[in-house]
Image (tube, rainbow, N blue to C red; front, side):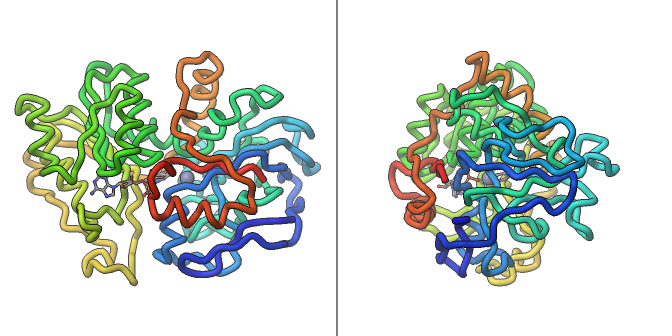
Amino acid sequence: MRALVYNGPKDVSVVDVPDATIEAPTDAIVRITSTNICGSDLHMYEGRTTVEQGKVLGHENMGVVEEVGAGVTRLKKGDRVSLPFNIACGHCRNCQRGSTAFCLEVNPGFAGGAYGYADMGPYDGGQAEHLRVPFADFNALRLPQGTEHELDFTMLSDILPTGWHGTRLAGMEPGDSVLVIGAGPVGLMAALSAKVQGADQVFVVDQLPDRLALAEQIGATPVDFSKGDVVDQVMELTKGVGVDRGVEAVGWQAHDHSGVEHPAGTLDTLVKAVRATGGIGVVGVFPPADPNGPDELMQEGRIAFPFGEFFTKGQTMGTGQADVKKYNRQLRDLIIADKIQPSFLVSHEMSLDDAVDGYARFDAREHGYTKIVLHP
Ligand code: NAD
Ligand code: ZN
C-alpha cells in the first residue's frame, strides 16, 4: 500500500510499504477516507522528536472497516468509523477511569499510545491507504454511513476533542471569559468549544492574519501578538480584570514575533492574564526533553514557569494529551445535530501523493494553509 513515511528533518515521502494486516484477533483494518496533517506532526517533521526513519505518520484518521479479527464482535466490514489518535486497550486501570490517553497496556513502559507518533508505541499511522486498528471494538467510533459531514467528522479523531479538552482542563463554565493562546487548528477548536459551551468572551492570540480571521469568523476576539504585549492587550480588553480561563494551544515551540523560541512564553502570559483562582488548560505539547532544542532548560524538559505568581493567584492547571473517547461520541452527535461545525478551518483537501507538498506548506504556516485533509 502507499503511505507517507518520515525520512529525516523536513523530509517525508510517499512510498510503497507492506500492507496493514490483522496482527491480533482484536484488530481491524480500516480503509482510510480522510486523514489530516496535524501541528503535532510538525514537531516530528522539524526533527524535534526521536521518531524513527521509515515510520508511517498520521494520527487523525477516519475511514471504512475493511476487515475484522476473530475477536472483534461489534464492528463489521463496511462500518464508517472515526479513530481516536490515542490507542487504548480499554481494560487497564487508566482506561477504566476514562483516561484513554494514558493507557498502560499499549505502549509498555509509558502511559499512552498513538498511531504514527514518536515515543507512542510501534504503531504505524494512517497517512496511508489502510490502517491497523488495535482493540478495534473499543477504539473505533461508529459514524453514520455515507459521506455526509466527512470534513466535520474528520476532526473527531483529535483536534475537536483536544480543543474541547483544553476548556475542560481549564475548568471553563458558562459565562466565563476564555483566552486561547494559538490560533492553529487546536486553538481554533478550543475557541469553538468555548463558544458552544457558553463562554462570554473568547480571545484568541496569534500573529498569522488568516488564522486570526478564522477566530473572528467564529465570534472570538483576535489578539495579534506582533502588535504588542498580549497581557497588556487582554487587560485593556477586559477593563483590567483579566480572563477567567486560559487555554495553551501552541506548545514548547512557541516563539516571539521574530521567530525566536520561548518555551515558557505562553504559560507566562496565561498566569499573568488569568485572574486569581482562574484555571489554565495546557494542550499544546511540552516534551519530557528536547535535547537538540535551542533552550538550555528545555533541553532537560524544564521551563522557567512563574510558579510563585501561579501559587499566589491560587490558579489551577490541567495538562496532557486529550482523552478523545471522553468527548468524541457527544461531539459526533453535536455535528449531526448541526450544533457544531469544526470543518470551517479546512483550507485544503489533497491526495496522499500531494501530502509531501502539504507538509512543507503547513510547516511554513503559509498564508491560507490552516488545515489540510488528505484523502488516500
Ligand atoms: P500549529 O503549529 O498549526 O499552530 C500553532 C499556532 O501557534 C500557530 O498558528 C502559530 O503561529 C502560533 N504561535 C506560535 N507561537 C505563539 C505565541 N508565542 N503566541 C501565540 N501563538 C503562537 O499547531 P496545532 O495543530 O494547532 O497544534 C497546537 C499544539 O497542540 C501543538 O503543540 C500540538 O502538538 C498540540 N496538540 C496536542 C494535542 C493533545 O492531545 N494535547 C493534540 C493535538 C495537538
Ligand atoms: Zn493531531
